[in-house]
Image (cartoon, rainbow, N blue to C red; front, side, top):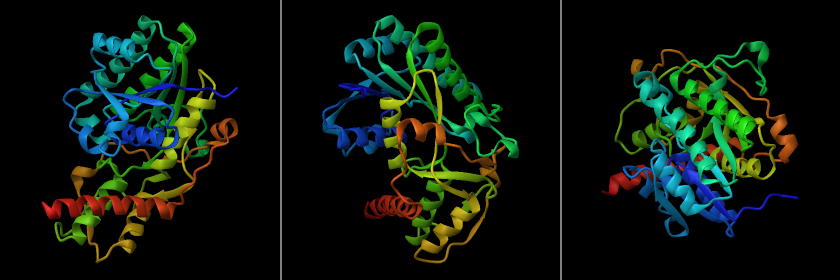
Length: 329
């Protein structure tokens, strides 16, 4: 029997991924109540959630404060939880490693402990990342879920710790936790991701706000998926995946960062000159992020709906609209 949900709680609802997930649920599953938690000092909430503000309930809560997590869980009593909240910037994690480790690991531990203390029994999805695999040996590509794990940055270490906590709480306390490991998705609301950064710079150059596009390493290979497909896959995982298991999720477009930049240059309304900015180079970079998603697809039947072309257009259009808003100010 397919799982049914009445109340969903999204941690990090005001962030780039959480807000798209909330939109997906509101638009496709209107019978489900959507609750979210955002930190009281979150600045992204207003913009990212403006389209659905009257259809969701956002609770002020800081995951690093156990009492506030417990209070929110008792108030909402969700039967499904998506855990997306995290400091999610790889480059920033090299600069502030302890802040990232503390926030991501303790925030997750507090969430799981508060669920136990509140004596509720929701189905939980830990929305993880392919970054946990680190630099993969080419013989292990495409990457399966049992691939050796070698994180190469503090953010990836924090996400691996989350993944391990999730498995521990499933095994030790019988909590209904599903672990997903998402590969790169095109997320227009996440300006620190290479694709969004490039598209935003293209829009600025088109509008005359910037002369030259700046980039870091162009040689890394990524597998890209549309953010709208990624959010649907999260929902399918909560409905159908087995507790305690890990699942890779990703798209079908395999492309280098440099090739992606060339796609944008061709779509631009003017010539785009680009050059390396040494500040954008990471101390270590993960280069071969190509997933094997057969386990997830076999258990859910999910497949991406949007083509690479549609995803790029969606991304560029979002960035052009953002820049035109700035122009009219």
